[in-house]
Length: 413
Image 1 (cartoon, rainbow, N blue to C red):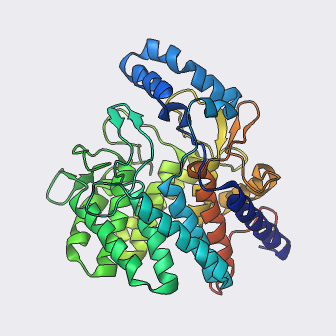
Image 2: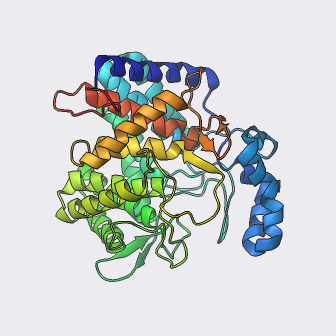
């Protein structure tokens, strides 16, 4: 990465920090249309009666496609634990790189906020969404612990603990690990294979990335706390993930025979978890699965411009061409696997260049989606300002490590 490109990236991060501190930590969201009572009832009707439901959700879908700012009519700004966790990690990375106490203080403020936003009524630390989430199987009430959110919070406390060694953060991490082990159910498929539930009430785990998240969290906790019980549970979930990799290297969203789509950021979630577990355990099966998965990912989830495609085959009509979440997770994955796969490095390079060229807004935030016509410019912390910020901070952190091979912008030296 040339000095000019490093300066451009640093400027983008600095401007984003200024925007974030001025804008505040609550935002609208991808789910704003359906998190309120009107949208929630319309979505529930869609799952019960497809034809009537399609009519009911049509105003929200049309607004999302042509007037994204209209989401304020359906929902309010919320603060999301998953976003706070990513911001905490990003600022912790900046603190580690720059040695500026300001960034450390901001990182601590985010983990302190997470302590306040944990799911009430649970003995152990856990986090979910601050809204009622209408799904195909019913309504998941707000503050339901989610195994797709809680591991990021674990990583946030770990990142801050690495800076200050505060036992308080370590105690929270152990509580999170106990939650993942004791409160998240396993669907046993054999003596060596189990699928993790999406939440404590899900005893029929089928979502691939849920098991990947739990496998990573418990693998890390096993090493951090010397607990073999964590490792045993992690291996069973890992075996589920590995056994559900398709022959072409991909993973369906779920192993239920219905949600057999392959999308960009969920593929990244699975590959990221495998990359982290590989680092922790040196499990060669992860290495093989990553190689096969990256081959599929780079061949089918990028377009002719080497930019992220939302789906290899979309399960339904989409109202957008490109997604900020895909950009964020592409860069995150590329940082984890930097230098190992030339095709991944090349696509991440093109993605970063396009991001800085076309997605930055004058106020320092980033566009959320490229729609079929125009852009969705509503900043959404969970979708995915926070994930992108963390990824850009990670690139800057790698730049300053002597042994790193940081991403280079397309066309740079």
